[in-house]
Image: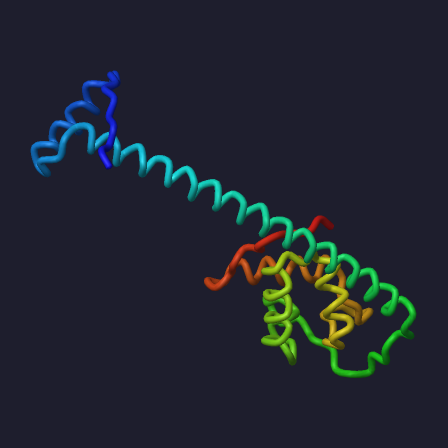
Amino acid sequence: MKRSTKTITIKVSAALKRQIDTRRQKTGETQSNIIEQAIVELLAARQRLKAHHSRQKSMARQLSEIANDLRRVVQKIDKVAAGQEPRDHRGPHVILIGKKHPWYNHPQKEKLFQIVRDMHCVGANLTMIASALNLEGLPSITEDGQWKTVDVDKIVAEIKKEHDYLPPIYSLPE
């Protein structure tokens, strides 16, 4: 089968013409082959870009669904937490020593920071994190024994100072 060809004229900049001539001298390819390959590569790149955008849209849709699920979970957590009686706070309280933060001497500091870091990384807002800490039963750093968004915000700020901080994949509004 004979390949039919048609001659076309393409106007290009002087710089592009020099690149084509240089490639032609190095490889021995014809100008038409070089231009044909460039067009094929351009079309393939465009297809890859379209596929990338569709993956991004799909991921954004999935993240939005996760955010909605998290909102529903937090609403349920808040309902359950509101119905619980206050806990007995006769346990030891964390004492602020010098200029260090109250959680510096927290008995479960590593677990506390891990929960806050993990939830923040997946986009949970401060209210969600505070509710999770209350449900987890971790002792609070405040006198009333309940985790508040202000306390969680201070911990997130401390985590941001560390070297292993990762910004959230997707964040929920407060």
